Length: 109
Length: 95
Image (cartoon, rainbow over all chains, first blue to last red; front, side, top):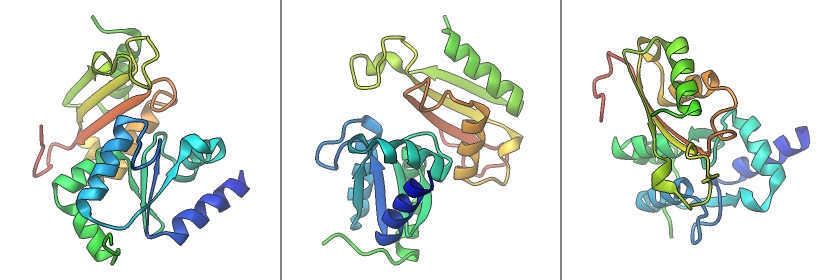
């Protein structure tokens, strides 16, 4: 279990914005993951994604890591932000863009 | 007619939060045939809840409180559970 926590820590530590999702940004396999991708695209930030369907260890491990039972999950600068409901509420309130600015996240190239 | 899971969610949230407002909406029919539809007719829910318990709590904290109150329902027994949690003193309560 600690091994998987270390793996996840490395992923969220090495990338400014990471989305753990089902499928890929081009081919999301779930409506909520699809919505999360759309929100990040709207924000225009550079992000990495991890397809949990390709890695059962991460799929289970990520839930314990963040104490959060569902996918997708967004991390910014190593910090857990939330799932797709929270992303949508923050996006609508302009808080997500603000967070990205405050954390000095790079724009998508 | 509420299904057994819908009733269980309703009861758990009522007991945990003494909500001023609680709606448990079964969205499963909208997702019929999609991934995550297990054929039970109780795979996708939206919860709208308003409780003084959420006062002063962040979005993340509110969702965590609801998820914890529901035990193994979110993500295990229910494919998708959308949560909108409000406090009576929120400036904007949304829909």
